[in-house]
Image (tube, rainbow, N blue to C red; front, side, top):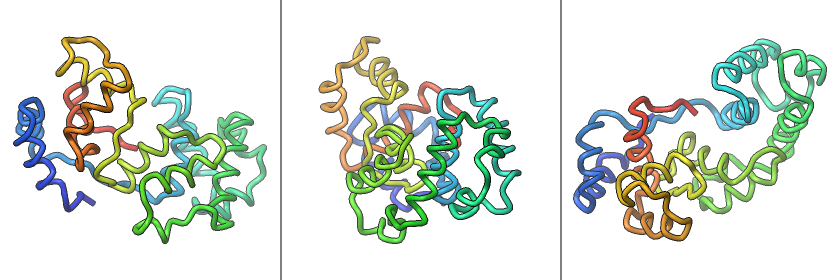
Length: 205
């Protein structure tokens, strides 16, 4: 699903920023695309932590194959040793289990998210063991397609702003936040274009 705001956001960002104008033209026809349901997306983010993309894909494939259906209930029903045999560390088994419990007990309110702020969703998600603010922000951008998320701790964003706006010098956190202010209410979109300037191939999240 392509965000319904994408064209408007791209036009407004291009009108106000010459760097983004060039990137909008360069990557015309591309956009954020939401993939997967919330539980699967978050579980995959936990599985892939601190390992290579290739290793994460392999472990994820075994993890999904071990479950009849990828649901919170099935994750809670499976024996931890089976998940360990899939390649998950003991800690990641705990994290995935905690995520599943948050879903099954209603501590994560997916059905209410359309009326929930970014900050409130981040608070829900970071209450799960193994999910930090950066992971929650990536989820808001790539799964929920929230238009105005600005992940200050993202290394790719920092590098892109350094390249295009700071003569190669990595901006301090407060400086990066100030750059973000010029891109409201489309900071997710600006971030996506800046990521593309470093890596033209969009990531799957």
